[in-house]
Image 1: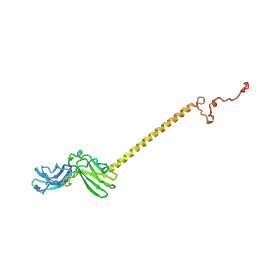
Image 2: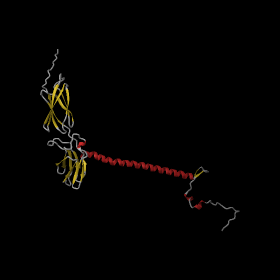
Image 3: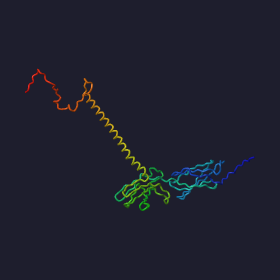
Image 4: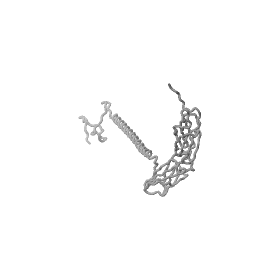
Length: 294
C-alpha cells in the first residue's frame, strides 16, 4: 500500500543557494533558487543592495516563476563593498551575501625622469582604458623607503605627473600610483609600482621578469645571427678559393700538355734559369765544318 502526500508550499522560507556568478567593476551577477521546487505561481522577490562604503541602500524587485533565478545588479562602483539580501516580497526569511566589485586598473607606463635635485613620475592617463574613471578624481602617490621600512603618502594630483623631492642618497624607494581612494580610503584603484635606487634608475616592478628575459633575448639573437652569417661567408670564401685553385691548376696543366706524349710534361727546378738557357743545346761538331775562333 502507498499514499501520495503533497506538501503545502511555505512562503516563509528563504531563497536557497544564493551566490555570485560573476563580478565586474560596475555590476554583479547573482543567482539563487526558489524556497521550494517547482513554484506553481509567480513569485515576487525583493533584492536589497546595501553600499557598505557610502552607507546607502537600494531595493530591486524581481518577479518570476522559475525555480532558478539569475539577476544582474547594476550601477555599482569599482572597488566597492556591498551586502546583498534576497527574500520574498512578503518579508519572509532572507538569504544574504557580500560582494566586492573589481577595482580600477593600475595606470600604465609609469616612468621616472631624474632631474638635478628631484625626480618626476610620469604615467598614462587612466581614462584611456577605464571608461568609469574621470580625471577630476585624480591619482594618489605613495612612497616606500626600504632602508627605513617606512611608507609615506606623498599626495594626490589630477595631472599625469608628480614631482618628488628630498630623496636621500643610498636609499632605495618604491613608488605607487593609483586612482585616488574615495570615502576614507575604502574605494581605491589598483596601484602601479616602480622601484627606484639612489643612482636614479627606475625599474617597473611588474615587468622585472619579462624585462630581464627580453634583454637576454636581445643579446643572444643578434650574436647567433652574426655567427650564422660569419659561417656562411667562410664557406663561400673557401669554395671560391677552391674553384680558383682548381682553375689555375687546369690552365697550368693544359699549357704543359704534350700531344706527342699524350700527357703533361713538367720541368724540374734544375732546368729553370735565364732566358739564354732556352737556346737549343749544341750536341757536337761535324769534321767537315771549319771551326773559327775569333
